[in-house]
Amino acid sequence: MNEAQSVLILGAGPIGTGFAAAFLAAQFAVTICDPDEDARSAAPGLIGRHGSAMELAGLPVPRGRAEILATLPERITQPLVIEAGPERLEPKQALFRDLLTRIDEGTVIATASSAIPVSRILPEQADQSRCLVAHPANPPSLLRVLELVPAPGTKPEAIQRAEEIFRIAGYHPALLGREVPAFVFNRLQSALLREAYRLVDEGVIGVDALDGLVRDGLGPRWALSGPFETADLNTAGGIRGHAERLGPAYAAIGHDRGETNPNWSPALVDKVEAERRAILPEDDLPARRAWREEALARLLDARREILKSSGQ
Image (tube, rainbow, N blue to C red; front, side):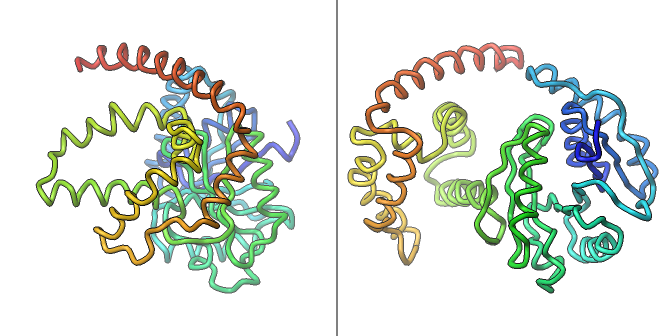
């Protein structure tokens, strides 16, 4: 194992130990640092539970043990530091200031924050050059997608280095072009949840019925494809056909909710279509639709067995 395959994780909670399990499974040397004695004592057990779930999911399981420390090393030589502490600004600011005095020149610092951007943690752009957000899905031991979010001062090579390391560990990073409040994962999640709350508040639907629509309809489809691919596959003419047929209806919903600019402009539709066709040429749409139908059937069959075991 070489120095490039090592990581320092700050925080021994569920996120930190989830990352630790994934990196141990990829045969990284993992060091966890947490000042809380109870958290340090619980960390091996949490990693073991993550490992059991990873095995059930057919993922590689953790190998070896993480080194667990109470205090930061004087000199940090790992190429990647993941800060996975509580979602509080002031402790993160103090920690990042300390880290900048300890890290080697090639080290990248990534915060797993779900909403606090680096530009708030380190307001001076000069300090941001090797710092970024790496916001994971939870639990990061199983869901191997994360958002890499640069600050205004983050150097491109820092993003590239972080992406390389996370890919080696089995992650699929989504690269954001810039900071936006709450990043993308939570903005998508919040859009659905905010509308769900409003519909319940307006007496349109009950909680269980709404959960059922997502669980039994949107959820299985989205387990196989994202919203753009789903629209691409659902409509004759692909994503452009979807925008032409249903765009006005979605715009009307936006107007009803008070959005100031709910329409998808022709230029935006052109951009989305161009990106989809670069991924999947139009001639390949029928084959992809057939694949999805078969995959959805297999997914629903497996899901039925899982739900049966829970009495549903």
